[in-house]
Amino acid sequence: MSDFSGKLGLIVGVANKRSIAWAIAQATAQRGARLALTYQGRFEEHVNELSQGLGESPLVLPCDVGSDDDIAAVYSRIEQEFGGLDFVVHGAAFAPREELSVPFSQTTRDGFRVALDISTYSLIALTRGALPLMERRGGGSIVTLTYLGSDRVFPNYNVMGVAKAALESTVRYLAADVGPRNVRVNAISAGPIKTLAASGIAGFSNILGVYRDRAPLRRTVEASEVGEAAAFLLGDAGRAVTGEVLMVDAGFHAVGM
Ligand code: NAD
Ligand code: IMJ
Image 1: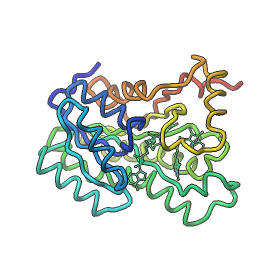
Image 2 (image 1 turned 45 degrees about the vertical axis):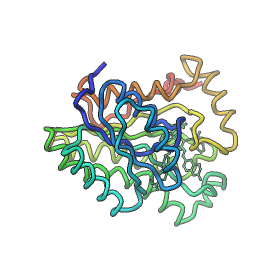
Image 3 (image 1 turned 30 degrees about the vertical axis):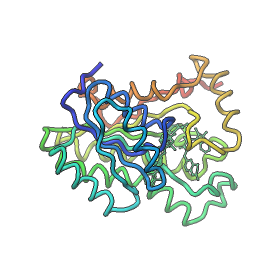
Image 4 (image 1 turned 180 degrees about the vertical axis):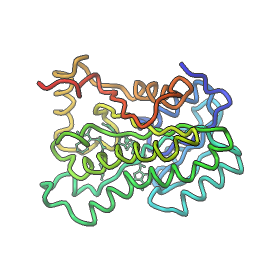
C-alpha cells in the first residue's frame, strides 16, 4: 500500500468517529500523511477532540462547503501552513431531512437546490481551489464518496440519488478537465454504513439486512475498508486511475437478485 510520508492532504466531512471521512483520515495519517481537517460549525468540539488521536496533530478548520468564502479561507490557511497539497477527500453531503421521507415527486425546488449545492457543486469548488496548490506539487488526487442510489432507486434516498448521479458525472468532467495537470478525480461508491448520515433514516437497518443477504460477500462494509480503498486512489498505487467510480460494497452492485 502507498506510503504517504511527506504527503499533504485535506479531508472535508468529518463529523464524528463513525464518519467515512474519519476512516480515510486515519488510513492516510497512519501511512504518514500530514492532514488538514475541516468541520461544519456544529461539529467543532467533536472534530478537535478526534484530531488529537491522529499521530501528527492536523490543522483543524471550519468550512461550510456551501460558502465560497469558507472554501477560500481554508485554501489560504493551507497555503500558509503547508505551501502545497497532494490530495483532497470530499465527504460532505446534505439534503433537507424532509426530502428523504416524502414521495419523490414532492421534492421541492429548494430541497433540490440545497442537495445539489452541498453534495455536488461543492466538489467542483473544492477541486478548483486545490488546483494551484496541487500544481506546486506536480499533481494530486481527489476522492469523493457516492452511493449506488445514483443509479438504482432505493426507498427514501430520493433527491440524494439525483445529487449522487450528478456527482459521479462531475467526477468524469473534472477528471477530463484537470487530468492534463496530473490531478486525478475519482469516487468511491460505498455500501451502506451506520454513520450520522444514515441515522434516523426509515428502513436503514432493513437495507443493511438486504446487503447481508444478497451481496456476494454476504456482509456489509466497514468504514475502515472504505478508508483503505481511498488510500489506494489517493496514493501512488492509483496513479493511472482517474474518472472512476470504485465500488466498495461487498459486490452488491453486481447481482441482479
Ligand atoms: P457523516 O454524517 O459522518 O458525514 C457527512 C458529512 O457531511 C458530515 O461531516 C457533515 O458535517 C458534512 N456536511 C453536511 N453539510 C455540510 C456543509 N454544508 N458544509 C460542510 N460539511 C457538510 O456520514 P458519512 O456516511 O460518513 O457520509 C460521508 C459521505 O459518504 C457522504 O457523501 C455520503 O453520501 C457518502 N456515503 C455514505 C454511505 C453510508 O451508508 N453512510 C454510503 C455511501 C456513501
Ligand atoms: C440516506 C437516506 C435514505 C436511504 C439511504 C441513505 N441509504 C443510504 C443512505 C440506503 C445508504 C446514506 N447515504 C448513502 C447518504 O448519502 C446520506 C445522505 C444524507 C443523510 C441525511 C440525514 C440527515 C439530514 N439530511 C441528510 N442528507 C443527506 O437531515
